[in-house]
Length: 236
Image (cartoon, rainbow, N blue to C red):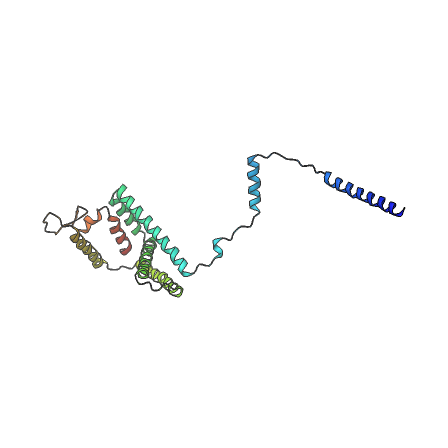
């Protein structure tokens, strides 16, 4: 009798467990699917992205002298290109006389002249010295260690600033001999390129098939912005 009661209890407990499993397996949740438009989906994705962490800005990084020197080299290159393109546009689209009038109007403002001269001089000096330093690196493979680059970058910026300030000084300086030297060098280069067929007493030579015999003719040449830039930078 005892074994029969134990067997009945075991069967009843098994049925109860089976009933629990059936109830667990048959339980269900209500799932609803809502239609969403593409615009709403993009809006949700955008809102979700706004909550994401933002990567650090470039301003958190240090800018040592070599990095600033590299940035300045590219900035001065862009400035020189823009200045030369602007002067060329004035000469090609209008006339060299318009460029002369423009430069003379700048010279007539005494307080503005040193600022303009310094703005022209610094990019030219800095980019030239930076190019010389780079040529030195290329041909000698020296001075490329971190300490040397640090020192040369500081020296490059300081020397460029000093030279630009000296060129922007509005004190009267005699650059007549310097201009004559530059013009003589141009004539020498022209003589090496191609001699003129005409036997003029002024020893005229041809540059790009255009006879040039004086600084006045040089100023009317399509490349005259170089000549005018020289006068703007080095003469008051």
